[in-house]
Amino acid sequence: MDEELEDLARRYALRRNITLGDRLGFGIHGTVFVAVDNKKPGFFAVKFHREDSPFERECRVYHRLNKEHVTRILGFNVPQLLMINKEFRAIEMTIVRKPFLLDFADALLDRDPDFSEDVLRQWEDEKAEIFGEKWTEVTQVIGALRGFGIHLLDINPGNIRFAEERE
Image (cartoon, rainbow, N blue to C red; front, top):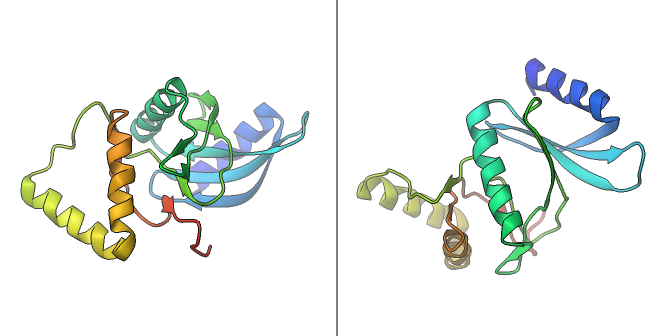
């Protein structure tokens, strides 16, 4: 994890009086930690974003999912929004168990991606190869998200995890 993001997370934890634990995940847009509020029991996740644009996209998606009361999509658990802090580019959310669907930093809301037919075909071929026999189920999840106006672009086994998959 880069120094700037680590400093952001540390300052946020001090401000919120929370304790950050293990890292649950990371990627090009940020990192996610398990956290506990020092004033009340229970664990949750906090995602810290490196940049404003992915943070804002993900916030918009979580607001949409919250407005629509989405907790599961075709059997996949979806994290529930707990809090957003713009100053720290932090999103607090529930921790979900497999099967799950997460990471909306690259998702587009209410608009299709601006890709050519060739690029879309290549993207789909690559994703179909990655997911193999599960690709049909993944496309159903993608379609269900589109029903909410969410166009998820970051499709990978870390973001769409099936129940029987190992960590």
